[in-house]
Image (cartoon, rainbow, N blue to C red):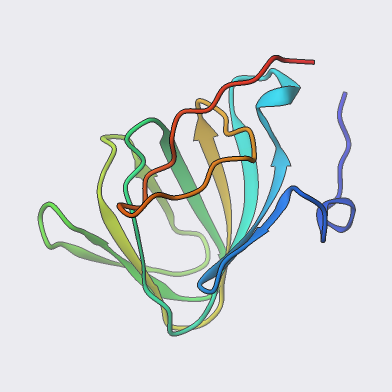
Length: 131
């Protein structure tokens, strides 16, 4: 059994920050459970484009409001607490938080915590031994 708090992760190497968002990686590939879990905060008034070619991501909105745009279709969907979006087709998307948005994200395969978004918003597939 693993018990971990956000406070334990804050300001460690599992707490990744950019100018648009902050992601606290709670469960990573090293735990060997087949997925990773992150608390990600997206900052109000920012715009971020992502496309996870090597991962499937589910995002549950805990607080805040914004929108997500499917860049393949141009469809825009509103996001608010209780919304979930699933990027099950490696969807290229843009997220625009109107207010600070706190989310819980699940990735499969799990991230290691060392990934960095490339110029297209893609995480490379990085693996590591479990244990």
